[in-house]
Length: 144
Image (cartoon, rainbow, N blue to C red; front, side, top):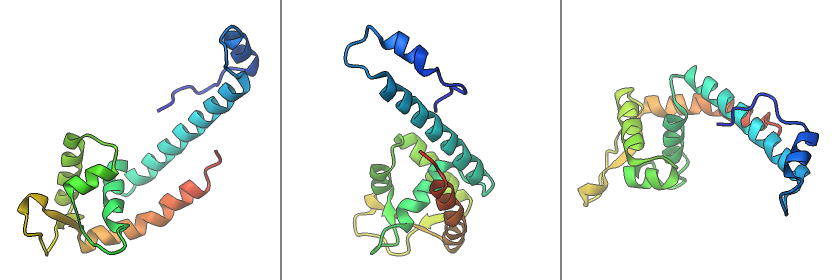
């Protein structure tokens, strides 16, 4: 997260970077503005997902499974390769999604049981389908 509510003025950035070679104060200003916009958007997304009793990580884990065009399940290892979270965070996320009845072991499991597949339940698919338009509306309205 980016926590500056008020960004430094372009004059301040120019004075601080005057002695720093190869630093363009206008570029620094642009990056700071983008960081601020991204942080506000992330907060808005998190607030929206909370209204649906989901964390961002939980929603993204559901998305990783739902977006597979030719499959309806993924293993935890496959989900972890698609998300930038630690294994303990992913384990907790999967556990909480299973506790909420949104995720369950897939009906068809591979021969190698170490790669147990997870799929969205009917409830999980319904929640995901209901949340997705609002999520995309937030992204679509984001000015970055």
